[in-house]
Image (cartoon, rainbow, N blue to C red; front, side):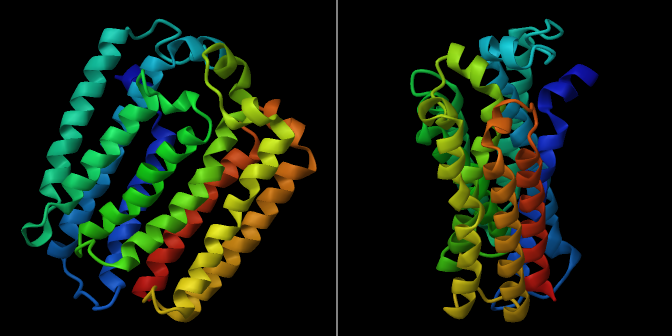
Amino acid sequence: MRTYIELARPFTLIAPALGFLSGAVTAVGARPHETWSWSLLVPAFIGSAMAVVFNAGNNALNQIYDLEIDRVNKAKRPLPSGRLTIAQAWGFTAITYALTLILAWLVAPHGRHECFWIVIVAIVATYVYSVPPLRTKQRGWWANITIAVPRGVLLKVAGWSAVKTVIGIEPWYIGTIFGLFLLGASTTKDFADMEGDRRGGCRTLPILYGVRRAAWMISPSFVLPFLLINIGTLAGILTGHAALLHLLGAVMTVYGLYVCYLMLKRPEDLAVEENHVSWAHMYRMMFVAQIGFALAYVL
């Protein structure tokens, strides 16, 4: 059991759970406001559990097809170390994906199954990312896109669907902010993996463009998406507490500039340190933005 938990990569499961729950809480506070009740939150908690299970299955699927890469980059993981077999990893993946679909179907406020269909699209995206012949992980910017869409855009919209219908601009606008952030920020994990990725045929941005140029290319994703918070508030697209949304936009923009400074002052360190500080800050920025949106809509 401990090895299966390691296969799921538990640290990475916090962000999707928080993202889904934040999306649901944001929908509660969006106009027209919902009345708080336990029954209102039940689909949100089911969906949050679904996001955890889905991400665990996705992590396992990715490791199955990254086995040769992980032999170089992460030899201590369950598959390259031999502590789990490919068959066992496939069994874990099948069970978690089946459970994901069941839980997604149960997220159906007022009989709407919008969450289920959003998750179907997200599952296809994870398959396309990891599995040949498409395997967008090997295809430069396409890898970033197939990470940003399910983990950024669709995660927030799915959380929103646990409370309100996703028909309308607001949930998609919020999802786009997170998607644009991950479009560049997701590359922070690729710098230290260049040796194994190169052997595995993965043409990530650092391999295609070099460390320094790739760092500059992804920098706008740490800043520009969060300016959309202020723009959306001024335009009336975002219906949370205006002052808090403007504060959130300012805080995230300054935070993003600080992370850019850390990356760009010595970009060569990105390819040397296994978990460069910018990678950790990517997760922290996600947490701050998720919590910030929820607070701006409920206070």
